[in-house]
Amino acid sequence: MEKQIAISYPESLAFSLKMEQSEFEHEMKTISLIKLYELGKISSGMASTLLNISRLEFLDLLSKYSVSYINESVTNELESDFDNA
Image (cartoon, rainbow, N blue to C red; front, side):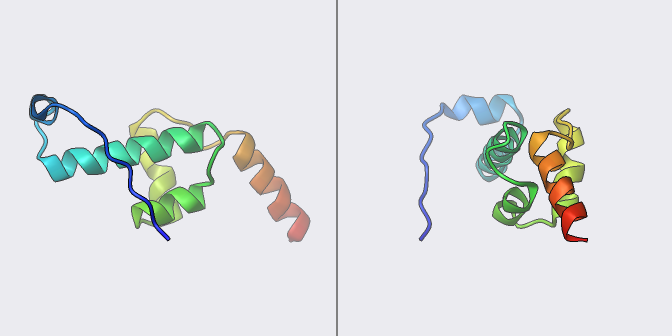
């Protein structure tokens, strides 16, 4: 089951960022998921799935927003991968 979040914003915001409405909405979704990843609330796999991109593409996208892909959740994922190898 999927839920939606509605965010009210003035039309001038997307215009001032030189974005079409759909582009602005995708950007807001992307930024939200990146922030949740940065805070360790979701995994890179979940974020990439929600953005319909590969995990590698998501990790590459982090650099565009100056977010490191190495955080506590990544460290835990790596430790788990090593234990399972």
